[in-house]
Length: 196
Image (cartoon, rainbow, N blue to C red; front, side, top):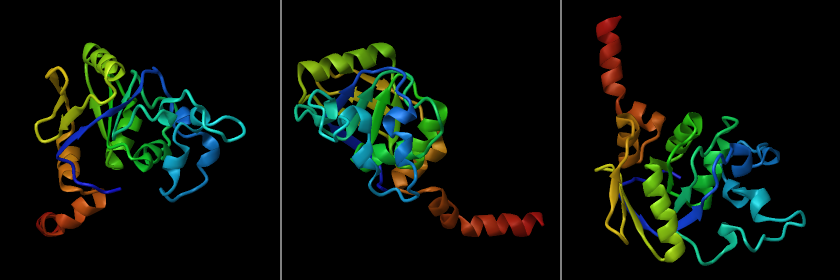
């Protein structure tokens, strides 16, 4: 799942639901595994499949009209429990970016830790994205992490988004927290020598 981020340009999958919690993202019955592999198969499981395990035709992930590595969602995404498995499922499905007007804090950090970029935009920009995707499912969005800008390529409108500078550095360089520490072993050892 570790991938360097730079500029991502993609079509989008729209999910205009608000208050989507982590149990809806990945139901609790799938949390027994401790390995990240396979979680994408159960992303939004109870919305994607009926009780017999057949795909629900009207659910967006089952609609071939929409695709791409950007998920556009309603506000307050990832509320509920702090399960990291929700971010594993999003990354495992192949989404690289999730765009919303608001994320639950813990889920937002879990996405960042799993190389999924949560992008916070204004309510008006989010509404424009949804409308644009429905008008033209081939519409592309560009997410420029180095410059912290998200652009609707159909209209040219863009917004700046915030990201913690440490997490930005890690994403741009494809580093998790352990990789970052290993890269800075000399500095850590020098600081310990000086301060002990």
